[in-house]
Image (cartoon, rainbow, N blue to C red; front, side, top):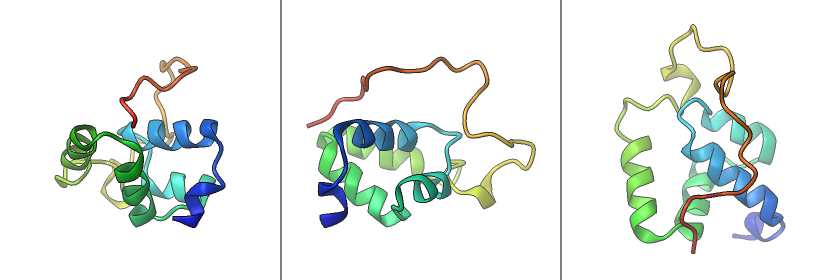
Length: 95
């Protein structure tokens, strides 16, 4: 977990936020933070409560998720909705 120790709290919060967003693919997290999908899963397991992690895995792992660029609708060109407001703090339940 040495990759995770160098992350600031702000970066950690952003990774969690990006992982929960449906429109943000794992490739975007990899590009921005150099964390592969398996690294993101390990990170989420370490930073979320067990129940929150299970909910996230269920949401991301069911095949209907757009977390992979290849599974996304080709009409989706951006990572977040243009109507989405900026979130200043992470409201997701963390450890």
